[in-house]
Length: 148
Image 1 (cartoon, rainbow, N blue to C red):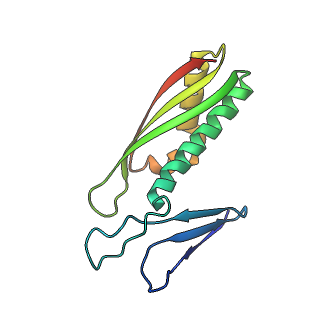
Image 2: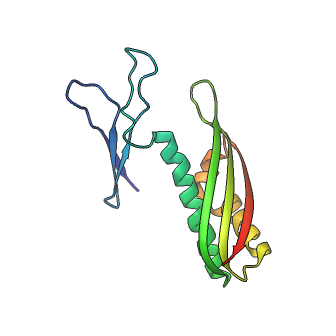
């Protein structure tokens, strides 16, 4: 797997916008918040923050695994939504210290025990992002199952 990241230096040299090109050929923009104080580097709020993309990637990783596991267990899953809430350390490096994931899984005649087991499998075994972030963050989950 590879990725390149390039600073998109605007005229005048101000701004913290970066563009990543993934090995699969996709483009992802990242930017910083506007500077908190004059003279500090700041972004233009044009795209997600880099750490927001890490959190989003974690949600994507778990959702992917969850849907895959449910399909393999012959569950009629029709939707999957994950809301992630995270806290970061107040000092550098500002790693994630806690992440809570709320899964909303919808389908027809879903077996709640199988959905909960699939969440546990992605959390404990399959999600690479959780495996890495779990070194610094307490990761918790809860599940909501909806009939559609």
